[in-house]
Structure formats: C-alpha cells, structure tokens
Amino acid sequence: MRSKSFEGMTCSIAGALETIGDRWAILILRDLSLGLRRYEDLRQSTDVTHATLSDRLKHLEENELVERRLYQTNPERHEYILTRKGWDTILLTQALAQIGDKWAVAGDDGPPLKFVNRRSGRPVKLALVDEKTGERVRSSDIQLQAGPGADERIHWRLTFQKT
Image: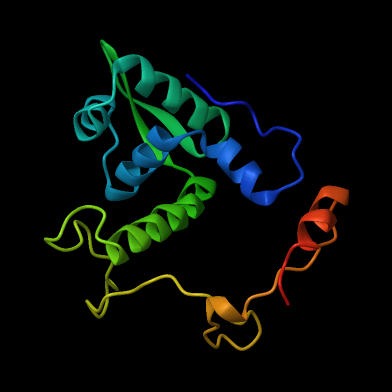
C-alpha cells in the first residue's frame, strides 16, 4: 500500500521521495546501477512480488528515472535502463549504504558492497564539500537557510534550527 503523496509540498526532499516512490524502488534503482536490466533479474535480486515490481518500474518510468527498451520481439521483452535523472538518485543509495555500513545494520561481517574508485581501486565515500573551494565540511558546521523557493512552512521550520 502506498503512502500519502508528497505532491505539492514545497520541499526538495519530499519531491525526490515522491519521484522515487518507496523502499522497493530504491532497491530497484540500486540493482539497475549494478547493471541488472531485465525484469526477471530484478525480481530475483529483490524477491519482490510481480505486482509490486511492475508497479514500481512503471512509477520509475513515469518519473523519468528509468527508460524501458524492447530487447526481444517474440514474445515482447523489455529491459530497464537508468536515465541521467535515475543515475543522480544513486547518490541516495550510496548515502544509505554508507550509513548502513557505519552502523553495521547488515551484520558484523562488514559492508556487503564497497564503493571504490574505478581507476585507483581506493574506497570512496560521500562527503559534504564547500561548493566553491571543494574543501570538506563537517556535518556539525552545516546551517540551513531559506532558498529562493522557500514558502512560509520552510521559514517556520528554520525557526527551530539551533545556531
């Protein structure tokens, strides 16, 4: 069962979540980023029901995160490819993996997946960086400010922020 829609909410986070859909969609995006493309492979990887997988793939396609391509005509079979917009959502899966690894939520044997630089083979992780200088910024040094699209509710939320 789907949750209440975030449509119309002035919040980039809510908008991104609305675009992605739900936790099953995040796992489908993860698998697509790993190179899985075919329906049966996605189903085997996630162990999700046919109805849920079909629904989530349709949602991801409607929101332009995936593109469906015909790869066989008799019978018709399609594969699913991440779009540029879909690839951008992979940052979310990497952030979730990084948090899960830090707190060992998948078990004590270590991370199930490692993110490494293809050229050097060295591990990589997501980090906050200064947009102009590229210098790393600690989470504790982040302060949120109203942006040009902020509505009254955003301004209200910001009144609770500690300075």
